[in-house]
Length: 247
Image (cartoon, rainbow, N blue to C red; front, side):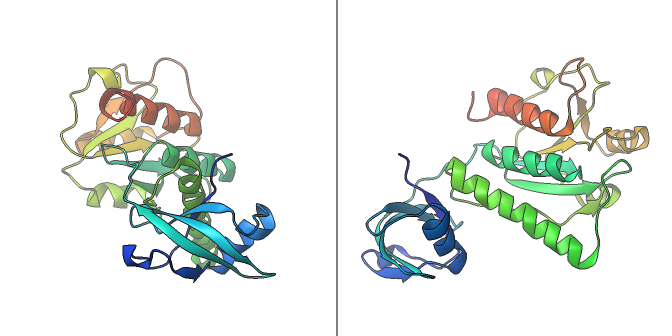
């Protein structure tokens, strides 16, 4: 049985080995009420700053849990190439799945963008709740896949705003079903990658045109039309196979 992993947003140093700490309430609830861990159980903590801590559950109260920090490992499981997934905001389930799989496949960040065909985007407090929900999905994916650094989910921006302020040093790829050239036909990027995936219905022709004018490269994944969540997963897998840690 694998050792359960928990994101623990505390300031933990390597000098804390042997000491006991109280787990944050949400982590304690998950460990005790969801996973039903008992005193003596092994678990792994990571703070998001890199590395991980092997720990032992020493107290299982009704509402609190304490662990002993046993050892620290500086292990990292990040991809060798930094990819920002620029994802057109999709319907709830599709967006959630895209974020989850993208984190598992090693993206460095996710930048949601509002395009002409995006799902309705809430404003104000509802927008903040949705953003927090997306970030929690990223955290849960890191707990599952072993990553010790939590990629940020950036605030959603209009597509035109993202395009005007993007990092010009990054290689930009925009996925479109009408483009014949594949990733394998592209030169190996020298730095980071911006990968643009449209929402349901893809990018509008005007958005594709302005992206071309901004220096992005159109790429395709064959003749079949993929769902937005499938397209993101497939494109990330191909990039990892060509230039990342699948190579």
